[in-house]
Length: 395
Image (cartoon, rainbow, N blue to C red; front, side):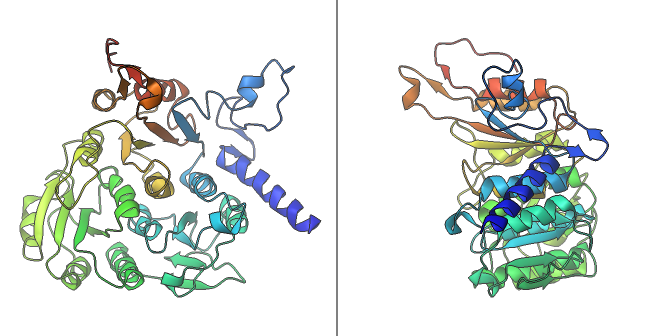
């Protein structure tokens, strides 16, 4: 028993180092890139050693991986602490990190009924952060997935000694179709809603991963000016579903939308750049679909546009805790104006007693090279509940 406990502690320590951006040869973050437990009050750097503000502020929490693989491991441990049988995941979706499209489509496995944790693998080579997280998570086996503990998405490592199910496809379109079929079998019925995104513009597709994890609606891919046969076949299997195209005509053309209308009803959501596109999706709602986040009291996930696999890594945060959409930032430094204004629009307020108010919370994905600490502090300020009579700050 002591050896087992020691092993788990060792693995947890290794994961913390990997997930915080440490790697052989140096650190990618500040002195606060490795929070410590048991910091003494006599230490002059106690607040920094505890991880403030680089890892947490009063309204934000950072998963500070130097890459999406480390971020996925950190998110998995945050969502599934695995200290008891009840907070271990049913299964782990082990997704090929060599193609962002596998991650965006595979995020649907985090939804009901499987509710899988998401980890990433460099093809058949499993990174240490992923291996250690997998040992710590100890998936129980998902009844909806035939008892599988690991769902292998693409050509990834095959961990020994666990029950696995495999999802494969010869290209991203076939793989997305296979993931959709797997999720349909797990649910016992097809979804009547599909999200369609560009296979060539990852920054516009990223927000679909959070929605797929939350709602269980599959994500399928198209070219700008055509619908691949595998995507057509997947849509036909859903029997005239409601199709939501995420992105502007520069990513999914009107010609492609016309072709999609032969396979279901189509609505387009989006804007001309990735930042505004994510906000448009966060705001959108109709009677059957959409986040509809236009008021306070929500979780928000923040990731960089040039790290599309962070969308898959962070997806379980959108289906647990404070549930919320993914917003994207174009640079590490400062908030794009549209993001700042959006956060002001949904900023919580109170008139008499803040205890009776509602609150927003932000998850910041990536280390300070992805999203800087000053940017995190600005996000924290815009998420803060304020007295209604207080003059609103500028974005």
